[in-house]
Length: 580
Image (cartoon, rainbow, N blue to C red; front, side, top):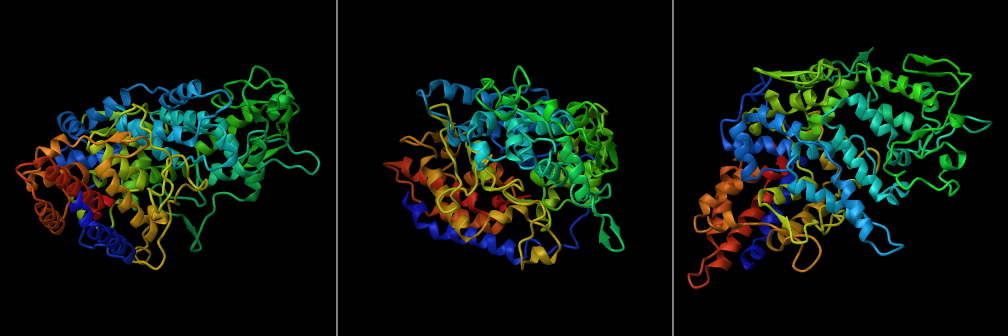
């Protein structure tokens, strides 16, 4: 692959150019002449590039089969098909099979969670469910980097499955499932949380984060997501007294099991722990639940003579669910994870309306149960809004989002139908920014995710334009060079453990076009950048690909190098790295 190696400096230039472009402000400077979105549901795709762009937002990436499917069925029917696919437990099932095959005394590793994540990202037919579950995992965060969680890899796999099962349900049910999952209980320390006694007070961690990050946020919001002001200042949604009152609700919950003995609450060996406690919802232990007055967010649960933890939990979660902030706070984050970092207030408002109504209507198609918090209606509103579907937005410098590293590799797998020789997608953690992606699923550095939704790169045009760029929190000089080197190797040799590497792309369709560089670039542009490559980028790619000779006596090497070069160039292009 000498041609690719010789062009390495060009790829590094392209990547550093992207960072300079965005961090310098060209992407965030605004465009007063950009067309305004008309609002409402979008029309069906009229081209393959429109279908490919939709799949970049609604799945882990486009391939030709999926593009043809969306083009033939239309957005609504495709969503219906995805919503109808049953949710299983693929991640937990994989961990169960791994554990069964381990020698006595050995435990699964983080890499096993990565294997099942990549397998589903690359090959699962229910792409929308898995893509939304990944988005939810960055809102309702737990992490394998946490010492309390890291010993329960099967539990983490089951948490990701739970997000998938709840992804097309109702936000209220999702919030309860998150709250009672033992991995969240470990991560935010409300598992084994005890009532106040003497100098001991209930742990306040989950009470704080469930409000700040999972439901209502720090400030009161208008339905369109803009911040409410009083005397020019944001109005806070809660204070320390709300945290104290809510923390008492989250007492008396711990490991599941056949009884509620004290030893089971504390996780001791007497009685013997339930073998499935890491995947079963936490259960209530009334003897450890606070019976004191619990006041929070305008709701008061009176003092009790008999503890009733489940009833208190229901009241607390209903209070959060019925808060007017829920729709714009959650809706905006879902838009950020799937479509664009800086949605307009009108876009957020329309998604909020669908969340509150529990329905989304497009022409003669309606989705949703009519119950507030319906997630199918909310997802449809996010993906089918004019701002999401308007191809003119690809030219708007304020629209779109940086494609985070995990999604970049997933897009390569999907575009080129990558498959695993072992069948298990043996790719472990990819945290190292210098030599890998600088990101691994389910391994965020904190409860605030890999990056905060409101992160603003300092001293940039993005900041000057009052915009946010969340993913830039994990982009820096080392990660830019590391990604280039990593993907250069991946494109040519595949990725994952074993020799040859376990995960290999299928470039058959691209190799068939290698003698016609313009058509080869057209195909890769469709798959990875949905027809948005600039004339300058196409010209540079064409020149580079044409520079690779095809020897008539041994044409395969030249064809392979042309495909590798075109793919790597596209994977390094700003049009790919910034999802529009």
